[in-house]
Length: 122
Image (cartoon, rainbow, N blue to C red; front, side, top):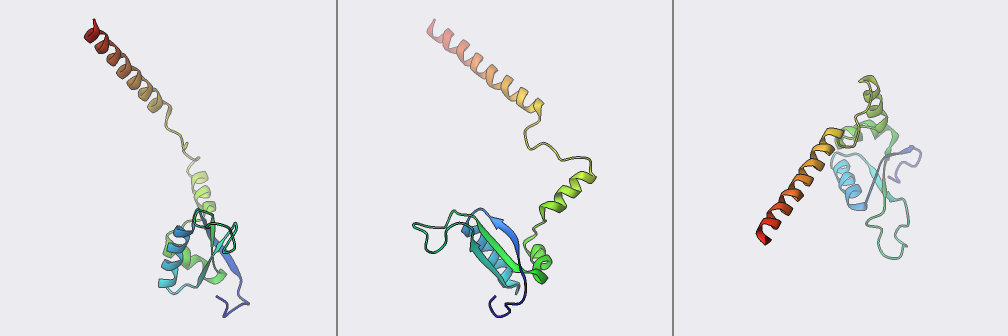
């Protein structure tokens, strides 16, 4: 990426660890999109390893939309906008009825186990 220092680099995405960032980097390079992975905390001089630290994937501003298409990565702003148009975002938690059914099933299993154990002992 150093051949054209006047072009602006933008952050395409921050990955949770280095291996996933490197896989995305390789995918973009296969498609001919220049990119750079950079550790957000520490780096090569860090004691130990930077393997499990967040890594940023940088691309040139002009390549950003193509890179998103290649990685099939939709920006969070677009997802938020879509949910707003559809009337709200679904809850990330389990629906209340699923929690209640699960609690009843577990309680029933425990009660049945206790009854069977008491009959076997007595």
